[in-house]
Length: 365
Image (cartoon, rainbow, N blue to C red; front, side, top):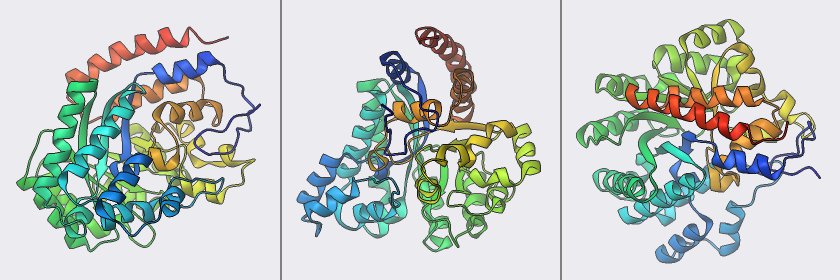
């Protein structure tokens, strides 16, 4: 029987995975470079926060947020609901971050870099930036102590808000520096909100010494959004970036530059717009490594996408048909893309390749 992971269609490859495969993908050492904090809230935590804040959300409505069909709707409405109704104090963010990191560590995520949208927290939830950031940073430190996972926080621009809000966000980051706050991102709905609107915030972030990344080419938006993010905003890596395949010449230049693309095998847009029987074959992510691009798989919104880190990697193998050798390279791409010092990067590359090869040797031929 074909199985379904992350509520995506069964693979055209018809591959049957053994217990050894499941064990392999769970034990695989991982970094997670593309995960949204408010998209990682446990179902039971969402319910508890709703009860605590007396949010005007029924249990059926909350349950619907965690239901994902074959043609899934996007998750942005859920993220807005959290800001609007559920987050009432900084401790709520500590709980969510700590639980996310605990869940990730259970799947051998050794290092996570995750997004948080401060604009909604400050403007809508009315939690001061300094308090909110401190709560998340404390959760990162608590998780490192309790689970051995390292993490970095990426405050992320709400691109549906005014670009001046993004400039203010960078100023908050600069004023309240912490070692765990590594850089700036941008997310929410890309349609009609191209990257160039936010050039001032990215300039300020670079000048302040922060790393940068951007969601671009996510919703079928043109490859020029990817080009703008790389060449105008000067991003260090790209989140999604799928439409870069429509410009092979530009893709070749980014491959030569070694830019890492953090891809998501459960991306909602392509699950909605591609037919189930050709979904894995026609997804542009499948073409990216052939163009020389460095991709790395991630969960994006794990509890809302109904996928965990082990399953995200498993999908790359069972649904997209990438080989073990390609997965090994994806693992190394993630290490290259991580915002860590060179000594740490080199140590991970040396140790994790040995670990990968040992685990791969346990799989059936």
